[in-house]
Length: 626
Image: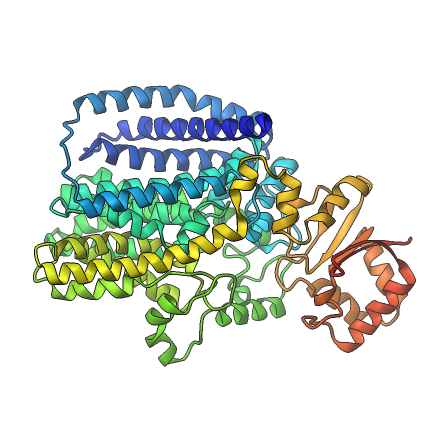
């Protein structure tokens, strides 16, 4: 028990220290811009977001110049301490000069604050457990770990996700150096908490008459997919942070006419672009926003082009490096997409076609009626761990937002929030329909929900109806969050009732196989995974796995071989010493092998493979006999 408590304290201390360094470093940079901040919390929000961006970008260049190792990361973080101290001195001066006003919170808003604290506490319990999210183990943590071991960026065969934009993963790389996967999860939760701070300050600055401050935060954080994603080592919250930061900066630029805000907006947009491919839509929104804002204020043509030039230049400068890295390593800046235009190393036309088809299967159809029903379906029919949107949104938005139509005069900032959300929703609707890819629209919509409910506070019947609808939505969200908590029961690990191996064995059925590989196989073993979900972070030996269509390589080998010996020779040429597979996807009901392929693989297995271990009659490990 004392050991596990010490681990938790150390993880939380390092997380707090890294966040303080990021905030101080970001404030050091922002202090040089002379941007007029409206409130102390606003400064903290932008400074911390930018500070994390400075750290992740710096680590990127360590990788680009093949200087990536624990010593260089420690040196980089140490170098950030001095500007961070200066930044915190300026924070202190700003804090002393701040005129804080006592906020009279409504009883309903206080209740929302209490519920929010409970959710944040539950999320923290999840954070303190070992990483178990599939994407975290297959690439969000695996890829930065491989780059760290290699000393810099390189092409990772089989793992197409290693060539996605990886700005968030650079922060996870720092976490792996400092402590490990728990710290990486903590960084992701911290970015989610930063979003909450940004929403709080946005409401205080731009919607001063709104009686609700905690309520929008609760609406956002209680969305089941938001809560579940926030405590994993994913990057969706990081993308959402920079999306909201850029939107907040844009509205401040429109309101305060200071070019520094446009630069901050562009920097946030660039960091969003560098985080996920979904961020590529943000620059188009930004350019449209600049044009509309300048048209609204009757800005001259030359100045409008100047503003556009600043926005595009800063966005490109911040966001382009990862795409250049992909172009150099794979020949395709948008790898693995647009294969017919750019091609791409380690990818082929058949995989590209199948990947496009796979993305189109997400959701509940792509006919015109499916698009019309999409808001209803994502609110009431979405499911976790299912092609049916792979997440849960809940009904709060669809129940509350229509009441905005009954408000006579909606503030222009709320209109911008809605336009921003609708634009991203439309882009999402024609791309990969997974709920977590839609998270960037939830903060502005949650702010709009808080404004809508607050606008009817003096109209008791409608206000009562809205509170009832909100209560129904929160109950639905709470039900899904409770199910996740009961399934994982994180307190058992946090309180020391389970060790790491016991916890992961309970959550991940194949984990005992990885334990065996790590402890009993020789250090020079190379394992070929076939439909093992590519959980490379759990494997301490060299391995190969197809990250999509996980039998693609073995099926290609079987298709061009006629005898078991030819299969043996093909695997020997790749240096494979062991094969680990899920029998359900090789010989079972989910197999994509042809009947001839199954027969040939069975013959090869009988002749050239020695059984080593199996788990639950599902996962089988074999040694290749050379």
